[in-house]
Length: 431
Length: 89
Image (tube, rainbow over all chains, first blue to last red):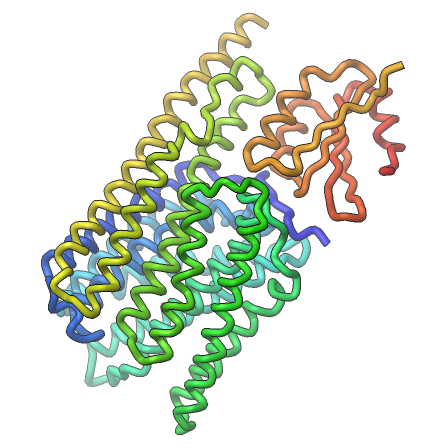
């Protein structure tokens, strides 16, 4: 069975994913700035306004931006139809998501009803714009694709996350109409992190790890069963929240979810050990770091230490994977889009950059080190809050570096594109 | 007599090298010859480019799951006949 089928025939323009990728580090820097402003009291409680603001700057502003941008590019690549009218959809979607995230994070931080109301409208509009196109693209499969099924489950999880989030925002704004139930906030976080983020990473990784790192395919049974099982466990956990079931039943489900995550992390580790090219680039190290963070996050979660568990999962697992994939995907996309412009003109080929020219090894490793330092500081903040300003500075530096890496790649793209055009024009004039 | 089949194994290369190497070999194909590419994935990014530049292709898959892509110029009827009747060993 062909589980590596990729389709580049309907690639959107490079600007479509890039506009989202370039926005993400700006939100990362804002998150660092919020940490600097809020200081050590951020970690006093998981309901602290600063922590809520920080969480949404990272989840929506950084992770959400990159994931939406990547889906524009990845869906047509792994066998779904492309998201229709991608170029036309991207700009308003980016604007709504960016403005909505800003209003939500500042609104939560400042407990400001006007900003929260604006966030409700903007983010609801953003997801109303995105989700139907996303699901439509997934429906138009030529054949069954396991990755797409997992990504579809992630999409359903995102829908649930958004509905719960909107409901909670509505309850905050209109407490007379709706009760602000913290159990629903827990579900919102659970579906967002373990549903949307984890399932999306899992589904995409089944393609990108074998593709970019020349590893064997993931076990077929794992691909077919892990995503649906994790989703079922989340559904059962959701039902338990509304029932009077004993706590040990809930703990049992959490244990099974953690086991699923650990199994996935272990398989990722093993597959990367089997890669063809033994030299570990920054992207491989990111996957390895992410795989190591999963059991640590799971252990902290099961022992009730929610804040460090969430930090390790969000920053240690999801964001590490995201950054590792960006370090691979950005040079690949830039190269691919330039390659397509060359056609078969050998003289134009000479203008194509090597991947390490687009994102130099030194810069990729710099990204990894800055990320590692920020992660370590953030997790330590849970026990030593005095480190918060340092963590804020590190976060700003990390995302500034990432923005620099991407901007440099884009600059190189434009330079080489001009050279390719010149070569093609010269060939046409000579021919 | 030289074989009309030119082999290129890109199955252990990371992207974008497979695409680059294939495209670099195509203009060098002598008349009556075809390129036989061995790949671990179906290189669909390539197909759009082949069609644009008047190359035809045929995809076969062996028992180990590897892909074999036979590529020839559309105008080369001799190479086309060889590829259409080609059977993997």
